[in-house]
Amino acid sequence: MSRRGDWVYENNGGTCVAIAGADYCVVAADTRLSVGYSILTRDHSKICDLADKCVLASSGFQGDIKALHKNLAARELLYQHQHNKRMSCPAMAQLLSNTLYYKRFFPYYAFNVLGGLDSEGKGCVFTYDAVGSYERTGYSAQGTGSSLIMPVLDNQLKSPSPLLLPARDAVTPLSESEAIDLVKDVFASATERDIYTVSSICPVAKIMLLFIFVVYLLCSVLIHKHAKYAGRQVGDCSH
Image (cartoon, rainbow, N blue to C red; front, side, top):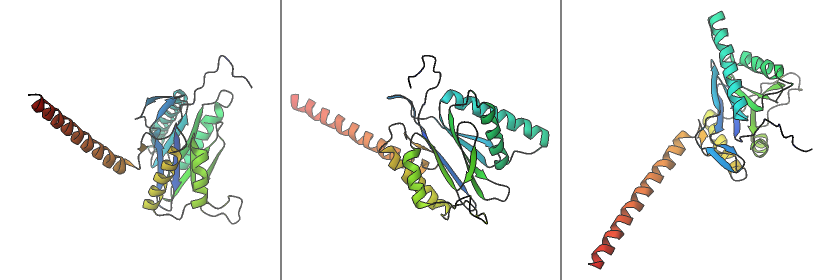
C-alpha cells in the first residue's frame, strides 16, 4: 500500500522493557531519538513517572508520546485532588487503556508498557496495543527492538498463560539484581541488530555507563598528554 502524502506519523524508534517480580518491577528504556538514519539526540528519556509506584515507558512518535504523557499526568493530578491520594498502578493501567481507546479513530502512535507495584506490593507489568487493548504480564517489551528482545525474555522467564485455571501470578522467579542484569543483556543484544536502540539505558544501567564514561575520560586525558609530549619532542628535535 502506498503511503499517503498527508501522513502525519513518524516512528522515532527506541525500545522499552519491563520485568515484574515478587516485590519489585524493573522498567528500562534506551535514550536514543532518531529519524531515519539521523540521530536527533542520545539523551532523551522515554520513561515518565505518572502515579504512586507506577511508571510508563513509551516508544514511537514523540509528539504523540508527549501529548499522551501530559494528558495522563493531568488526569492523575485531578484524581489526586479529588480523592486525596495518588492513583494506584492498576488504576493507571485502566486509565491508559481508556485514553488510548478514546483516540482509536486517530490513535496515539505510541507503544506503551506500564510497570509498577500493585496494592499488595507485587510487581505488575501492563502491555498495550495502539488502541488500548492491554494485558497484565510478568514482562514485556515495546518498540523497534521488541522483536529481538521478546524471544530472549520468553526463553528466560516465560510467564504462565492467563488461560490456565486456577490463575497464577504473572511474576518472574528472578531476584531484582538478576532481572537488572537480564535487562542489560537483552539491550546489549538488541543494540547489535537494531540501529534505533540504545545510546544509553535509563535508568537501570547508570552505574555501568558511568564507569564507561570515566574510562573514556581517562583515555582522552592520556591521549592528549601523549600528543603534547610528542609535539614537544618534535619541537626539540627541530631546534
